[in-house]
Image (cartoon, helix red, strand yellow):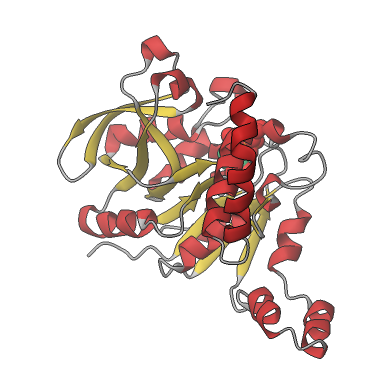
Length: 296
Ligand code: UTP
């Protein structure tokens, strides 16, 4: 029987240059979508999949992540005194979770960030969640991928169809469709030029990986952008193991990018009980002014 997926890695060691100056001294992963930092959405997604061990890869200026998931005794006491039960419940909800933090000493790439977690993962399959790829909490992507791993026993990558104008931003696969959204992967390429992209199926920020990836990452030389690229390691893994891609058709926001972040914020606000009504009213109010500005 295939091993259970109990561990998840949350790489958060990147520089977040697309969000400068906001990310100069604060982590991108702590940017809020309405009222919750984006990394908390990813943690909650993993909790919903019965993940038991949470490994966060941090880096310089990322201390706020550790503080966020720590208990906040003074704040909790104050909320208790003020009888703010709902807020107290909200900020203590994750207090029982044990997090392991590993500091990536330099932002040498996603592959390197994952390699930093090797001592904590050992010889088990594990999940990777990139918290700046925000998945709508109503979707079941990671759950579906775990189920596929349990059946197939190999690495599973989340895929999304992206417009060819965007393809150069992603790792892209060449694969053979094998039904129910599954693709048997034949090749992968990191950030290809549009003309060289083998398909429009891009790898997005959810992975189930087998532990053999660590040995490959250890030997890997820097690839595109001088970084240790996970896509290059997956390409090597493919020489010895089958890898499947799973075509996700639900809602994902590339919140590491300004426009994607704004889209996530608007859509999450529209679903937020506290603000949605007033927010919709506001959007309807400003809609005519957007039209007169020449936008459609
Ligand atoms: P990104 O490609 O979004 O890079 O990384 P970035 O540095 O965060 O942001 P930009 O592109 O400069 O704006 C994808 C994920 O991999 C993590 C990031 O934190 C993010 O979750 N990462 C990236 C690391 O943990 N370490 C790295 O060295 C690079």
